[in-house]
Each structure stands twice: as C-alpha cells, then as structure tokens.
Amino acid sequence: MELKQAIIRFNTLFISVYSLGLFLTGCSGTDTLYPGAANQPSGNIVKIISSFPLTGSSVGQSQTIVNGIKQALDETNSTLCNGKLKIDYESLDDATAATGKWDAAREAENANKAVSDSNVVAYIGTFNSGAAKISIPILNQANLVMVSPANTAVGLTKPGGEPGEPEKYYPNGKRNYARVVPADDLQGSAAANWAKLLGVKKVYILDDQEVYGKGLADVFEVTGKKIGLQVLGHEGIDPKATDYRALMNKIKALNPDMIYFGGITQNNAGQLIKDMRNVGMTADKVKFMSPDGTYEQALIDAAGKDAEGVLATFGGIPPKQLTGAGKTWYDSYKKKYNAEPEAYAAYGYEAAKVVTDSIGKVCKNDRAAIRDAVLATKDYKGILGTWGFDANGDTTLSTMSGNTVKNSKWEFVTLLDAKAK
Image 1 (tube, rainbow, N blue to C red):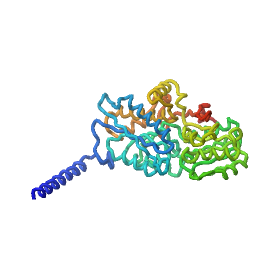
Image 2 (image 1 turned 30 degrees about the vertical axis):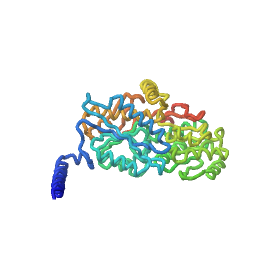
Image 3 (image 1 turned 60 degrees about the vertical axis):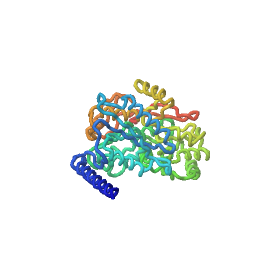
Image 4 (image 1 turned 45 degrees about the horizontal axis):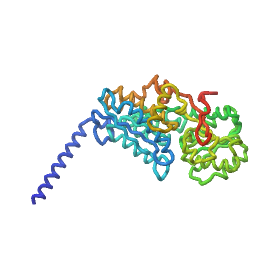
C-alpha cells in the first residue's frame, strides 16, 4: 500500500513539474527566436555544427575540412569575448553507408538537429551543393547562419540555375547563407578558357545529373561555345553503371580533343576515366578535365594508373600554393596533423574563422545578430587573401587554379582567371 501511494505521489509530482515546464516554455517568448528548439540557450555556451560526408570515399577530403575547423577553434581556445562565451563544436556526417555519399534525408536530419538545439548559432557546410538545397531553407526559418567552404552551385545565391532560385531557399525572406568559394559560373568559365589555352578544339561534355555537376557542365558548354570550342555532344551519365565502354566508343568515334565531366568522384568518375583509356583514348591523345568535385585523392584511388594526366579546376588556390598568412596556416596544419591538407581544408578553416569572428562581435547567443554579422563581412584579411561577402553571400575572391595528376598525386599547374574572356 505504501509503495502504491509513493508511486501515486511521484506521478503527481512529475505531472506538476512537467506542466510547469510547459508553462514556462510557453511564456518565455523564445519560440520565435528559436523555432522548434528543444531547449533554451545557455547563457555562456554557443555551439557550431558542421555537416559533411564522412562516410564513403569523400571522408578524406571532408576530414581535412573538419580539421581546418578544429584548428580555427583551437586558436581561440574555444572561448570568445574575454572568456564570456565558450564554443562547443559538433561534426555531423551527412552521408550514409548505403549511398556512399551525401544523403538528402541525413542532411535534413542534421539541419533539424541544429535548429532544435538553441545553443547552436552557426552551421558550417555543406560539401555538396545538392545537400545545401536541403539545409538552407530549414536553417533559414530559424535565422541560423550557414557558411559553406565548398558549395559552388550558382542558384544557391543568385539567378542562373533552376526556376525560382535562389528565392525558394529563403522562406523567411532574409538571407542566411554565404560561401567562401567562388560559384560555378566562374569555375565553369575558367575551365572552358583553360581548355582553349591547352589547345582543345573539340570537346564532349558529360555530367552526373546532380545539381553541382550539371550546373558546371552547362556553364562550361555555354562559355565553350562563346570562345569557339566545338561541343560534340552533352549528356548525363548513369552514376551507378558498371561500365561506360559503349559511351566511350561512341565518343571516340567523334575524335574529341577532350572529355569534360561535370560531377563528383563518388558518381563513378574513376570508372569513366578507366573506360575512356581502355577504349584507346589515351592521355596523350584525349584530355579529361573535371571540376573540384573530383579534385581529391579519392579520384586517383578510384581511377588508378589511368588517372595520370587528368586535369581538374579548383575554385581557389591549393593549400601548398598559399602565401603569407596562408603559408603560415599551411605549415601549422602539417605540423598539427602530420598530413597534407586536401583542397578544401583551408576553406573550412576560413569559414570557421569568419564565424568565430562574427560571434566575437556579437558576444551573446543571438542567431539573427550573428547571421547579420557574418553576412556583413567585408575586407576580411584571412589566409585566402583580403575578401568579403557580396550582397548575395558570395565571396569577392575569383582566382582559381588548374591542376593535374602526376605520379599519382595532384600537382598545381597554373592560376586561372575566372573572368578571362
């Protein structure tokens, strides 16, 4: 009997406390500031979440981005505003073992997790532009700023992509997204201009039918035609095909100087290269060029010996080629991690520095104020140079690079002027 009465008293107390909690939450006025938040912000803690593909072959590239973010946070000792604020950081994976690459459902899960934790004031990511299309609107409704070190699809920030872009990603009517890399309208143009400088006259264009890959291939085609390249054809591939020999034999019959592939490594770029070489389009006869979605060790691993001579554009400057503050960062990264940073590590670091600097200006857990501070970044002296965000949230940097595989390693070839005619 005493046990039964104790249980009744416990249940009554639980219901009373729970009801009081609901009442206090409802009266706190924070529902509009943190829509969907599962808890209220801690006064002295702010949190940064990142979202990158950490499962599958992208992990090598993505882990160096995460390393860059950690490096930036370590420099502040994870505190800001004279110790007033402590920074927590959580790295999330937006890829799944089933897909071997980023996954839309997982990215949505990550974005919703960020929104629901009221201590989260910034989201660094994503790597893939398709993933960004999922997360930007979710974060936008919560006034949560998102800074990408790698997204390049044009339509995320400005017209030129799909109908309704970019407005459809910003349901609350105010921008919350910025990126520290140039967009595809610049990279696609730079690639076409570089192809012409390399003596290419006839090109066949392929893409992986994703937002990023097709967008780049389309820009390459438009620019290529403007500057006199003969486009022999343009088609999307099945990224799950076991081989592309029939496709490559068809292309070979057209006698191209180059195949341009708009896409990512994880959509079978390695197999494309293998089958291209296997049907007789050797590196000395037909060039293969792709964008920075393949500018990673994973492509070399996938294509093996056939990767030799492959060309890739990169929406920036490789880590080893950085100078000044960039060189200091590069040396520091190698010392800290005892490894070579992949292409986007510097951009992960720079994104994190912009975020922490903006939090340091606001000095409180205020998502909207931190968002505004990030987007107001101008004349920022970082490891990439002096730059800022324009009205669309795009970086003012436009210098890019051309790279090639030599002796099973990526090697810098030349700087590219993205605005070259």
